Structures are given as C-alpha cells and as structure tokens.
Length: 229
Image 1 (cartoon, rainbow, N blue to C red):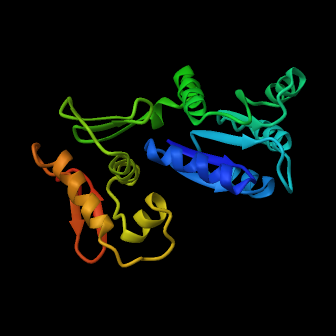
Image 2: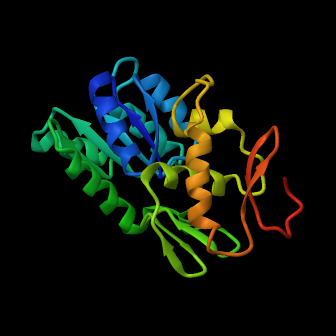
C-alpha cells in the first residue's frame, strides 16, 4: 500500500514510517499541514495517517478540504486530544478512524488493515498482475501460477513497484528513491542483491521469465510477448 503520514513530530513520523515499511508498505511523509494537503491532493494514496495539530494547516482543515474536493481516501486521525467531543469532531470532519496518542504501533497497523477490509480500497488497484504473477495489495500475498510465493518485506515493495510500472523500464534511481528513500546513488549493490533474490523467487521455478534486466538502463517486468522495454 502507498501511505501518506502527515505528522510534524519527526520522531513519531519516522517511527510510524519505519514500522509501515517493515510491513511492506510504501510511505511518504509530510511535516506540516500545507505540504501534507498538497501531497494528498497531487497523489493517489491508499490511506492517510493524519496528525490533528499541525503547523501551517491543522488536520481538520486538511480533512475538510479533501472531502470537499471529493477525495475519499481513508484517513486515520492521530491526536493527543482524546475526549469524546474531540473524537466526534474529527470523525464528523471526514476522518474514518481516530487513534489517541500515545498509541501502540500494532494497534495502528490493525486499524489500517480493518479500514482496508471495509472495501475502501478500489478493486482496480488491489490486484496487480502480469501474466500469471499476481500481487494482492490488501492481503499482501504474491502468487504465480496459483502457487504462493513468500517474499521478504523489501522484496514485496520492489515487486509492487515493478508491477505498478509493468512494461516500463524501472531505473536504479527510481528504486533507490521509492524503495530505500535514497535521493542519490550510494554506490552500493543493494539493488542487484534484492533483484537477484526476487528473480529467483518469481522466475526460477516458472516459465516464462518475467523480470528482465535492461542493460545500462534498469529493470523491466513484462510478458515475453510484450513489445515494451
């Protein structure tokens, strides 16, 4: 899942992002309300995690703007304001759930999963597929030819990104920025190692091969009959 965390406390924001990434999610972060609203309007996220008290623009104002713009992305509000009236106010503003700080990450994760199970996620973006390779973004399961493939969290995120860009060349820079949050090339073979492991899992025992290296450019996930890449 692609998740936006709008939280001005950097320690809390990094704690949430780290936990979500370890569970295979792609995470963007905004540290104030103005940037958060811009990102929420400009990108398609599966879920938003929104702090209520933010600099520049408060969380409830963000919610009201999103809903008035017909953005129905599920939103979990995080706040130290935990009175009944506070929670009611947040839900009436357009929040789908309300979690009071301090909170356990396991509860946040359970609430995310519960929201997505309600059918808030669109069917057309739940299942990513190329040939007989399928990734279910709701259950986090990967199958090829009906056989379940067990992936590590980082492998899952890489495959999800490749499937989202199926038939296109995915460069090392794209993977570094989207999967590792690196905005420069750290001169590491980390991508090659993970791609090799992923290829062994999704291609080694199946035919035809779907994950291809494009010399001097990057990688491409596509069917052999496709003219892409």
